[in-house]
Amino acid sequence: TPTAKFLAANAERWKAQLAIVARIFPEARPLVQALEDPGVVGRYALVQGRTYLSGVRMNAYVPPLNFFTDRNAGLLVLLTLLTDADPEGWSRASAAGLSKRFHVSRTHLITLLRDALQAGHLERREENLYRVTRAMRDAAEEFIAGVYIVSAVTARGVLAEASDRRAA
View 1 (cartoon, rainbow, N blue to C red):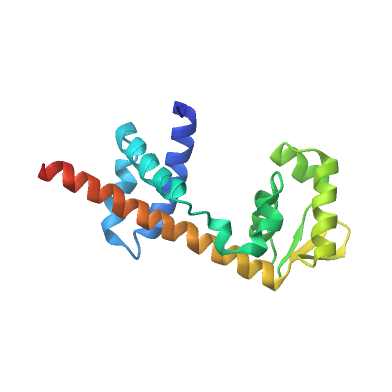
View 2: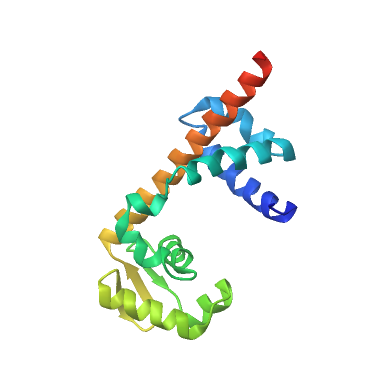
């Protein structure tokens, strides 16, 4: 059974995602505020869980991303390098700083960054200055788009179940 803390953290993330989804799927707007209600959070979690249990895995649609998603804090590191980047795509990041931020060992981060460089997923201009390659940026964008699609599908499922309950 999920804890209240777990559900609250996810509710915040889902609200942020749905606020964006609602721009192209206006029916989702009411769910943004409705996620303040623990009952709605529970229903949202159940509908999204059914999607997961049916076999949908976001990284299955974006195989290049597996390099990062298969490693502890890998996706967080990738997204950090992308969001902290300057206009040319360069991001200053140290293994020590990332390890503290994401609570993994410095050795793990050094290995992750080195392996990503060797695999051609990152470029390095100087120590602690990295850029995510175009192919990996594209993969990350596809992954994020998929997250919003799953959010929209989940919202539709929650709304349909609510409508069915009202009709019954």
